[in-house]
Image (cartoon, rainbow, N blue to C red; front, side, top):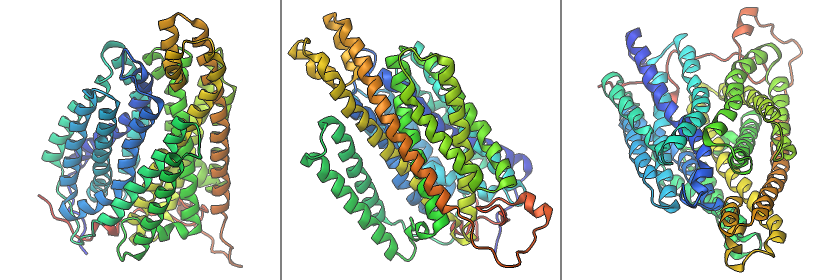
Length: 544
C-alpha cells in the first residue's frame, strides 16, 4: 500500500489556502443569490422574474449539484482530481459570466444549472485533494480549517451582494466570481499534484440520467402546482408521478450495480439512513425559510439589499459558533441529547416566522436568526461527522456521496415546496383585493407581491400594495408552520435513528484520553482519521 507523497509544510498550507478559496466560491454563490432574488423579480432593475422562475434559478443549480457530485468523484479517480477541479473552476467562471449577462429568466436558469455542474466538479475533487495532501494528525486540523469557508461564505455573501446591488447592476453578484476563479486556477496549476486512483470507478451514466430527470420532473411538478394553484391538473400530478418513478428506477439501478456511485444500501442502516433523512429534512426547511426571508426583508419590509445582507449576519455568526459548540457538547454528552434538541429548536425558530409582521422590531428578528444559526450549526457538523465515522473506512467515500446527495436533494425539494406553498396561499389571499383593480392588470398582481406592488404604483392604487404585503405575510405564516412541522419530523427521525445500541453485560471501559478524542453516534466509539485517504480514492497516487 502506497501513501500519498509527503509535501513540504509550506506547500501544504498554500494548497489548503487554494482549496479554501474554491469552497468559498460555492458557499458565496449559495448565499449571494438569496439577497438578489427580490431585485431579480423587479421589472425595472431585474429580470421581471416570477416566483416559479426564481425557484428554478435557485433549484436548477442545486439540482445539477446534487445529481452530478457522485459522478464527479469517479471522474477524479479516473483523470486526476486536479484536472477535474480545474475543469470545474473553468465551468463555474464561464457560467458566472453567462448568468451575469443573462437577458431573461430562462437564460439565468440555464446559467445557474451550468454553475451547479461546475460546483459538482469542484466539491469532490476539493475534498479528495485535501485528504491526499494531509496525513496523520494534520488531516483533521486541515479539515476543520477548511470548513470555516462555509461560515465565511454565509457571512460575507449577503453583505457582498448588498454592496454590489447598491452600486452596480444585479449581474455583478455573479461576475465577482471570475477574479476569484482566476487566482484559484493559478494556485491549482502551480501547487496541486494531480492525485488520482489506480482503481477506476465506473461513471454510471444510467444512474446520472435517471437521477437528473427524476429530480427535475419532481421539482417541475411541485413548482407547477404553485403556478396552477391546483394539485389535480395533469401538468402537476403527472410530472410528480413520473419523477417518483424515475427516482425509484434510479435506486433499482444502483442496487444492481456492483460498484454504485450512489449506494442506497447505506440508507437501510438505521443510524446512517435515519441520520441522513433528518439532515435532508433540515436542509429542506433551511432552503424554504431562506427563500421566504429574502422576500420578507426586501419586499415586505422594504429593506435595501445591503440592509438585508447585514440583517442576515446573525444566522452566519450562529452557524460559525454552533459547529464547534456542538462538537464540544457531543464529546461530553454524546450525539443524540445534543443534536435532537438543537434540531427541535431550529424547527421552532422557523415556525416563529409565523409571528413576524410588517412592524416586528428588527432586534427580535436578529435574536431569532442568531438562535436559528446556532442550532443549525450544532446539528449539521456533528451529525455529518458522526454518520461518516459510523461506516467502515472502505465505505466512507460512498457514504460521503450519499450524504451530500441527500442534503442537496433536500434543498431542491425545499425550494420547490416552500415556494409553491407561498404562491398558492398568496394568490388566494390577494384575490379579494383585485375586485376594484382593472382587469388588464389583475393577472400580474396575482403572480406575486412584487408584481402587485409595481401594478399599484402604475395605476396609483396604494391600497393594492398594502393588500399585497398582507397577502404575502399571510402566505409566509402558513408556509412557516408547514416548514416547522417538517423540521420537527426530522428531529423525531434523528431521535429514533440515534438510539443507543444495546450494551453488553460488561462494557469495556474506555480510557479517558480516548474518550476525549472520540466522536461518534453514541459518544463511545472512537472516530479516527487514517494516515491514508479513504478507499474510494485508491491506494496509489500519480503526481504531475
